[in-house]
Length: 370
Image (tube, rainbow, N blue to C red; front, side, top):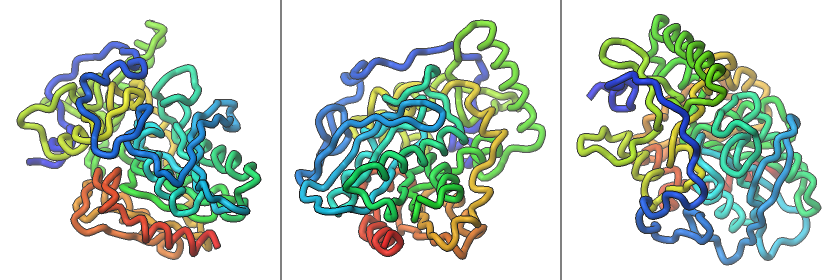
């Protein structure tokens, strides 16, 4: 099967979508199915470790947007500890992947902060479920602010762990904010490249122009209606070469002939394994004009400024997103290391603790936050 089609980048129809409100918390829990093994209480997709304390917190970024986070602290904490800001994937919430990572690192002795980026989850922002390469990069530095003000955190030992689509923002933030002493990513995506260039940069110049024109038309529609449509963030084309955004990121139910990558994401976001009613990826789609800013602003342009600090990019040998990590590593080999997990696909690095190389990540942060 053609890879573009396998990723949903060729669509069947191009019907315009109308605004659909995000479901209230718990609205789709019956549809989600039985909770996965080890699932936690309160909507968390994992169980809290008995040696870790979790506290709901709020903090503000420099744009004045209040962010929601969960602070994870080892119960036997003594003195000033190293700390990690944790977020991602793009369209997920802190009760999903970032919380699982934060919980594991806290179990290993770190203070960790899993947070919802601006406009998503429980974080502030009047327009819901809109992404911004600028504001979402700032969210990482705001998380560092919060961590560095805790009396039990060593300000000189703060790092960042990004997952999937928030990884590009984590690396961008680290390049511009030297308080982030080390940064690691898992299943990294560069959302600016994904939205403006397509999977493996397949968009032609003509297709990119069609998307830009589509976004302009959608802004007029939103302005006239006084609301915001929910549409694909990564815009597909139909068989006639026309833009064909969907009003859902993932289908309500998985078709029998679903491609492997759609099935992979569905198995996490739309089942009891990883479903959460505040997650964009579990429920609906991004605000339709979200790609505009990602066309306008590239990420990681100053990645060379990360050195002499270090980054570790973790990807899977079978991950469709592997090329993002490989390409970033090539641009800054003096600062960026690459770790390829044999046999792992993209979503394996979300929650499969038998696959995620936590020992290697722990060793990386131990060395580089020393």
